[in-house]
Each structure stands twice: as C-alpha cells, then as structure tokens.
Image (cartoon, rainbow, N blue to C red):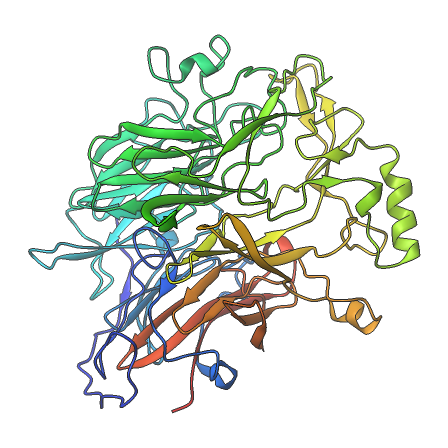
Amino acid sequence: MSQIWRSALLLAVVVCQSSVEVAGQQPGESIDWITVGGDRGCQRYSEMTQITRENVGQLEVAWTYHTGELDRVPQKIIECTPLIIDGVMYVTTGHRRVVALKADTGDVLWEFDPMELEHPYPLASGGVNRGLAYWKDAESGKERIFHGISDGRLFSFIPETGELDPDFGTDGVKDLREDIDRDLTRLPYGPTSAPAVCGDRVILGFSCGEGPGDAAPGDVRAFDVHTGKQVWAFRTVPEPGEFGNETWDGDSWKNRGGANAWGGVSVDEQRQLVFCGLGSAAFDFYGGDRKGQNLFANCTIAIDARTGERVWHFQTLHHDLWDHDLPVYPNLITVDHDGRKIEAVAQVTKTGHVFLFNRETGKPLFEVVEKPVPASDVPGEQAWPTQPIPVKPPAFSVQHFDETNVTNIGKENRDFVLEKMQSLRRGPAYNPPSLEGTVVIPGYHGGANWSGASYDPETGLLYVNSNNVPNILTLARADEKAPYDYQHRGYIQFLDQEGYPAIEPPWGQLSAIDLNAGTIRWQVPLGEYAELTARGIPQTGTETFGGTIVTAGGLVFIGGTKDEKFHAFDKQSGKLLWEHQLDAGGYATPATYAVNGKQYVVIAAGGAGKLRTRAGDAFVAFALPN
C-alpha cells in the first residue's frame, strides 16, 4: 500500500511570553482541549477566565484557516471539534482530511488525505466526521492521533509529523471490517464520531444501516493503541445465551443493524469504564419483525474498558419506532444531591429528556416512571405499551402537537397547518407510526441531537440546545418482492406554506438545566429568522446542529443556528452577550484553549448539511485584542 502524506517540518519558534494570565496557569503556558468533549468524560467545561462576561464583547477573529474544499464534489459539512495539544490544533475537514495547525496562528504544519490511499471498500464512502482522539503514554511519552472514518478505516498518526504509525494495523491503517464474521463489503460501516481512548485501548462506536433490509452490526469495539488488534467487541444486539436476548422475538436479533454508538463515547479513566448512548434498532420506523423491548437499543450503557463486558444499562426508550436513538455520548459529571457529592452520568435524548444515573450502578438519581403510551394499529406491529419518563428534570422540548400549539406567526400560516393536520394523527409524544401519517414530536432531529450538552461543575447546570420541529411519518406496504413488510415515505418535516415549522415557536432553544435540583433554570430562543423579526414576530429560534461549551469565565459558547451566527451567552441568566456573523453556519461544537497565555475559542464554519445553508470551508478562532 502506498502512503501519501504531506508534512511540513515543525520549526522551533521563540515566542515572547504573554503578560496575560489564564486561570490556573502561569503566564506563557498553554491549556489543551484533549478530546472532542474537552476531557475524557466529555463535560465540555473550561476553567479559563480570561474571556469573561465583561469583555466577551471585545472578541475578534484571531485567525481563519480555509480547508480549500469548496470546489470538491460533493460539498461536505464540517462537524469537527478540534483537538488542541501543546499549541497544535488537529482538525478533520469535510472530506475527512486531517490537518495540523499552529493553534495561535492557523498556519498549516502537516496534512493527510485518507482518500489518496488505496482502500478495499470504494463503494462505502461518504459520511461526516466529528473529530479525532489523542493518546499519550504516561511513562514513555509516546503519543498518537487516531482518525476513524465512515468507510471503515482507523488511522494512527505520529502527531509531530503526520506520518502513519507503521506498527499499527497495516502500515498505520486498521481495516475495521476484518474482525467481523459477516461480509460487510457492500454495507455502510464505519465511525462518524470521534474515537475515545481509555488506557491503551482506542474505543469506537459505528454508523451502520438503519433502514429495512440487511445492515452491519452496531457493536462497540476496542483496539490496541499500539498494534490496532481488536481487544474486545460488545454485541449491542445480544445472541442466544447472552443477557438481553430474550427482549427479541424469536430469531429477530439475527443480522440486526442499529443499536449503535454512532454519537461517540465518553470515558471514566479511574474506573476504566466506557459509556455510550446507543441508537435505535433497524428498521427505525417499523418493528413488526423485532417484537419486544429490543435491548440494547436506545440504552445508556456502561462497559468495562478492559474486557468489553456490560456493567450496567438503562433503556430510555422501548421498541423505538421514531428514530429517537440516543444520539450522543453521555456527560460524566458530579452532582450535589441532599449535600452528597455523587459521580453521575447525564444522558440527553432526542425525546427531549435528561436521564441522570449513578455512575457505578446505573440507578436513576431522579425517579423514572413507566407511563402508558398509544398503541399501534399497523398490521404486525406491537408498540411497547409504556415508556420511561423522568419525573425530574422536566422535558426541555415540546411533548405534544395538536390544535393548541399550531404556529402563531400569521393567520395564513396557522390556517394552512390546521387544514393539513386534519388528515394526520397528532397529539402526544410516542404516537406510533401509521399508514395515514403521524406527527412525530419531538422530530427526528430532537430534542437533543449529536451535539449533546455541556456541564458546569461550578453551578450544576447542564446546557443543551434543542429543536422543536415536528415530522410527518407515513408507513406504506413495501413492494411484494422486497425482503421486508413496510417502508416509510421519506424524512418529511411538518412545515407551513412558507417553509417554517408548523408548530408555534421557539423552534430552537438553549436550556440551562439544574441537575442538582432537577429543574430548568432558564430557556431562551436560539437563532433568528431576520425576515420574521422584520415582520414584528418575536424571536423564533431556528433548528440547530452543533453544541455548547461552558467556561469558568461565565460564558456558554455555541454556533449551530441557521442564521450562521456564533454566540456567547451568560451562563447564569441566558442573556446573549456577544454574537459574530460567520461566513457559513457553525454546525459543530466549538473548543477553547490557551497558547502562550492567550485564550482562544475556535469553531468550524462549514455550513451546508441538513440546514441547507450556504457551504463554507473555514475554522475560525477568536481571541481578545492584544
């Protein structure tokens, strides 16, 4: 296999130390962002206080790096959160290239294009990429950067040069299909979210087919960081004799796709535990061929990082029929309940709930009640009769859609929606799919989505952006020659005649949820349609993709909105303190770091994607003026 890579020599640079101090650091030192979640447990919190409520309005662009991919076809969204290690930033582009940049200037140090290497699965291309993983051996100081991509390959890089590690896999590349005892040659299979590292293991969740028909398995897998050899694989759809197999009717577990950790992994290094939020079982919208609760689909799960054995699980949705998979890694946090510090796991969901668990046992820290939900009348389907609903905190997204909360932005808009909804089933969440069409609320994009949440250990507040955009789900009999019974009529959002969501605003919002008290501290609309504001309509919010980070400086940073702005909010009140108009939407989670005593905030501004705004190719870093 030929190795194509370009490397620029890292020059020794003498830099004058800044006189500006960053909290917890001496002048001139650096602060890293070592995972896409900031830390291994993915709190997405920074102790830095150089940028504050008082001076955030002075932020300005420090540098911009353009990937140069706007002319590449097809255009690809950038969903990467950068890593920043010892003053070097590592990013992935929309076309899955890896680029190392000087974190204080944006200058390119080296870059690598995996598509220039020969690979055995050219049909299995496409897919997004949300970032990289970093590993360092505490004794030897050996370091590696890991890059998993959606065509089913895992790369190991030497950070200093961008060269592939010749001891890893085959010439630095691990074929992720080779340890699976099924032929996945023509099936989509590979990671889209960043790998995670625990000890000398690199752990991956996978994206795989979720439609009717054959699909690759959604197993969580671990590999040796030195050699690339598989260490363990946790079967997310258990086989006979394994715990949970009885939740599948007959042999419906066979060749079952989904139930996958496509949203990534968080890690408790001290306990050697891996935590995942697992997706729905395939097929997303019809489960007549998989009657039962379907473990471990839609579960938050703790896995022993050394052995791959299940430690505990909790299923947040039984027998999913709405594509309401757990879309993101859980946050590993510490809460204060009745004066006791409890190490916990917080899982945000597409259904608009936060589930809070004891980290060691999986026991919910707030009561969860099984509530009756509507039955299905689709032939062969058996919707599960109850669903688990946390008593606290309250849902952060709308839980019903009917005539009482139809859009109110104009009479014509409202009348259009009212007429259209007469032929649809509507009402509460968990209304099952139907042949005439069912309104799904929250919609397929949540509630929360892959961008997840951030947590502030100072205040006990969890910050999550969410969507209130319903979908219309209609099932239809499949062609008699198809190997399945039902298909759906497309991923259709319920919109008015102008293309705005059919439900009353806000359509996107930012919530601060107190996980000590189990309450919602504040909620504010997130994003704006300028043309509606000009019509005198209060801020509606927009659908969002891309998440929050929170800092000790009192700030929550987030892009994600359809208006293509980057925002800073007061973390205590939700007041908007600063925003910057990007050249393209920031549909990624930002990162913050310090180099030579100066704090920066960086976000990918790639636009495009599911919000269908203009495409961009930039990573933009902001800092206070010198």
